[in-house]
Length: 383
Image (cartoon, rainbow, N blue to C red; front, top):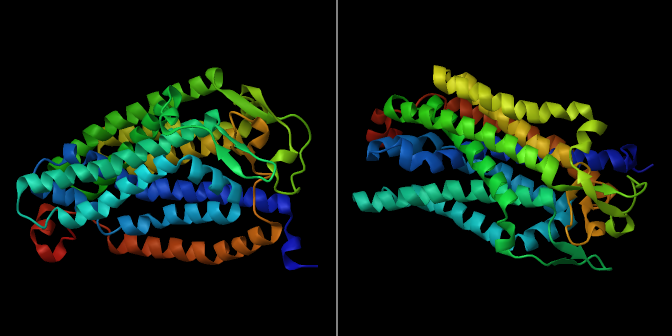
């Protein structure tokens, strides 16, 4: 027997669906606070020293945090090729906006201190704001569109044809989902600043973080209610071979009903949205009581719950089609081959723990607060 056959194809598909979620959550938990700090930068830090303090809290780690973004994209490319083809081509302009905004971040970090000019530095500070706010918003908008269904179809030879437009992505529900994402990551960034700074920067971060936690609860609850009563769900019309070939057109999908049916079929998944709201509520209390470690942990739990709730609610659908439901991509019919998923799993088992260990070591080495004296002393300042 070939080695990869010891693990069922169905199980491998579920494992890689879960690992994709883990990578996306890992990106939100790490680079998410970088994006949050960038979004908060013009508001929590009002002098050059304060802004350099805020920037130096993320300066040593932001590049490493983006590893999770790269791993997520790589996992989609290798484990879910149809998903990669449809999403990266259909969301091309949105992806371009994200990449352009992310490119602004390293440029802003490097260039803001090249000149001793207030207007020059202020311009790059706003560039850092764009580099934080735009990706946070667009990621949420993308999730909002996925929940509604994306206007694409597959031809008989499985070539994807996207029939939407960029402005079509900016529909009311998707914008609400974008606000959930922005609120969530601003809360996370504020929790990071509270943990890593002191004085006025930390005080302002607590204020903005508390408001962001409230906004996270309200927007997430509203998005959930809207999803329950105003967004059609997708489901299979008949039996599906969970270990069958990766051809979405072999299954019949119907649109209708509510996504909340998932909670009737699998009641235990209610843990995810409950954690999303509870985590944000605990983060709010942490901001109000100045419990730094507790606030950061609560913020992470909220992000975990919010992102997990999307995947668990939609399972087994990954990318539904709004114009041809039968073209919808699911866990059971849009993966790579049995052998490919097994080889990738072996690689993940080896390398992901190494990445986690290295990341933990980096954060341990860089532990502690960034102070004004650190940035004044050039030897201790990153930017």
